[in-house]
Image (cartoon, rainbow, N blue to C red; front, top):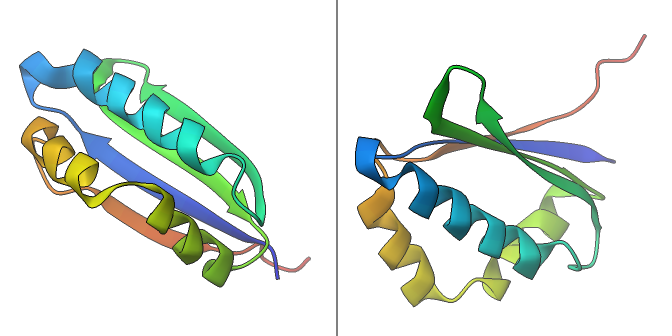
Length: 96
């Protein structure tokens, strides 16, 4: 079943550009992962410290497998950019 993953991030005030660059690098690592249908980075219209990634996957398992493409050290470095912990959840379409 196709699944959508919505991830929300908030950068520290002086780290918005660095977080945006980090998230772009993450997308570059996972966009070619098996089961990835699309992946898009968004920035909130009136608050550049708030970003979101919208991902569409063949399955939850495909998304979870893609996380191994991101080196743990890189993820640890990103923690210094966050104002609050990142949030993410899986969604599926509501049947008509």
